[in-house]
Length: 516
Image (cartoon, rainbow, N blue to C red; front, side, top):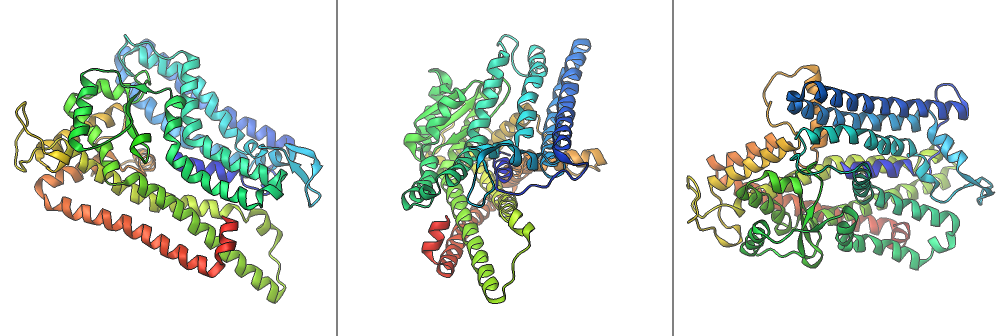
């Protein structure tokens, strides 16, 4: 869940007066409890690694079970580690310690010690340490799984430890750390060069950064993730032929070498000249040609339905609306203070910057999550259409089957083929495939909750499969669904634009642009 993690790390870097240790007291307590928390997290990772290696060494026939348990427990430990990092900052006093330790000798305008450049990153440092050290620990477990054939053919060599760590770091830097670094850089400039930060040129440049990143970030994806063009051969020729039939344009098809660790495909880029379709090595090896066509059709569906543009517009407008709301609240409080002489308590000033980020994170989780799940389902339908013939009652495809241009057909065979691809990818990536309607124990409820949290943007595989199969029995449902998604997307964008205009009139456009 990269978006929510970005918001969490951004919240940690805010100018908040974090509390001193709520248990014990002093800097030694803050550091000691943080070290203990990090040790607990790494101890759990080491125990999982040790169990994987020892079990496979003694009972290699249990490799499928071990891979499933390892995948599930590692996902669970992600939430545990995140919770421990939050405890370090809020309860054990690490945030308080970091913001009073990483300072310069000079003082700011209020006579307080000046925070060092990029020192905000010291607040989430416990999480970074847990994450980076866990990668080192998990390497041995994944190497053992690879040797037993779980993560790919034994004939393919696994990463060296350095290559594995570099691959993990590349993904973290591109998907999560880059926006956090930009936010921290902006705070550093405001702290050390306030006259520059308040200039119109700087404000314009800051605003221009967002569309520039949205348009040209795909150009960074290729070098940062170590991607390379999909080599010539039957697979590339088949994908190019399907792209022509769907009237889809992109810059290139790229191969993501993961040494069999992940089966996935994705599309990046708003414009065809900077648009790439990316396939991991595992998905190319696991899926037969017709199912790979279906997965490619899903990615094309995101472009054909304008989902990337929709997401970009939704996020930009949402941030602008939140900024305007905060400005309006601030103006109202200033007016109330001027009339009554009331002054907010000190703790309000210390924590005032945190609630907006928390509110935005919750808004993204529920509203954007719902929108994203509907768009994923719409892309699923396009994936079915991409491999469907023109016969709505067909019973199978063969070498003589004719497929309509621009994915204008939808047939049972196309739906079932996409469903097989979806279930196969879910199985390879260890996502739950069944279990709906069963009576759940406490442990299975927790696993279901964690699985739901993990699938907040895409929905679970069983739900997606059930919807697609229902289209065979009720073809009209697809038309109703398409109308509802279009109404949802346009309704959200128009509503956000209308609210933004009204707020801009209330707070004043100049003040709004200066705040933004």
